[in-house]
Image (cartoon, rainbow, N blue to C red; front, side):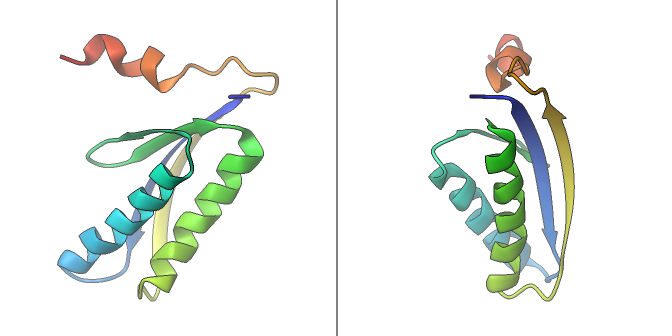
Length: 98
């Protein structure tokens, strides 16, 4: 059940192209979850169950560290509505796609 939507931006504390390499690993992980994922230029949005999404946010941090970042800062936006009914990614952006 989709009762939550999370937008996450990870900022691993590394230099240069290493940032993109690590962020790409995080995005690959997000896509591997099988959930609906929307990659934007500053953040990636994922929709699914609240508990599952909270675990995914945690894993994003761990991936950055495992990939060599000494620390990571993340910005997370969350919409949670028990029982479902959060607006989906498609409902939010489809009308703006060309």
